[in-house]
Image: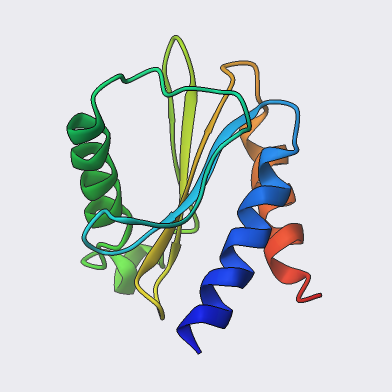
Length: 125
């Protein structure tokens, strides 16, 4: 089952990287390990160090999967951070304890990107 699940995630992440402003789309587990997806073909990370990138993905995973305010505020739909050089958006998949992490160009419309993510991940074909 996991192989099928990873193939599903890999396919969806690849579809996301076809979007013009998306640089990276990956599924990370609760330990911050990349299990599917990656950078758009031909792009390199802005953060050069592999260990810094892993530490960052671990941080995003922990932050996105937090639940202490779910009862009062509702669950997290996504978290977004706009930086000078890129936009980072993370979407929790709480049942599987995976997080979809996307980095995009700073010009991206975050709400439109969120709509695209929902559409892509809702399409089970």
